[in-house]
Image 1 (cartoon, rainbow, N blue to C red):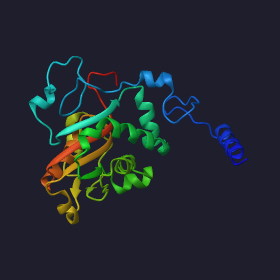
Image 2: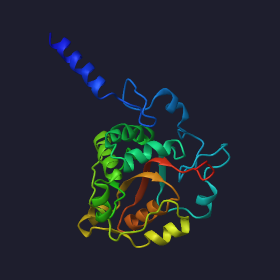
Image 3: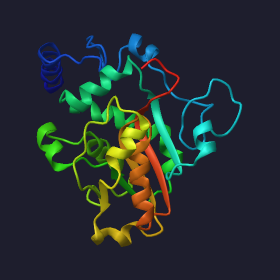
Image 4: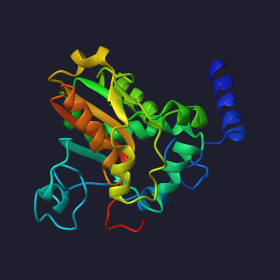
Length: 244
């Protein structure tokens, strides 16, 4: 009898609140993407740059031209899929559309692709946003992802170490040089956590890696205050040769 009632309630829930594809909104049987959207997402695998993770067309070298020219302050970046005009729909729903329920699946994907890279990490830190932006948006999507990753990995999650000390203009649509100018000096580390960073491996979590200006600045500040290694983990990354 109990099982019949439970199944009835589940069926009623699915009718009133159907599970939909994160990207296109089509009704699906389980959380995630429908088959059509799954096939259209550009999942990132090898070959790719060993530092920044940008995908290569052919397995020609270990590092991309940007990392060969000037190595970033972070040691490695891992992303789940490419950020293009298709996957952008899902990311914006999560980031600006209050679709925070998809965080669990996104963080699961992130953990799966980065499991080996972060297995010896000491602390997980989200890229922070200024409190004024947080008041407007109501949440920091990077914090949500980092918290879930902490649960999945068992690595301590600490959202208070890295702080956004001054507001900056919207980064989207700006060139790399403008992004660098925007964020210069905008991040800081709470002095109470210096010992937490000292000679530690940090997992720095954000939603999208675009030019790398923000995560590079964060990585620089973390290493300046004692971090030995910084591994960047994002849902998506822009392929500068893509269609965005």
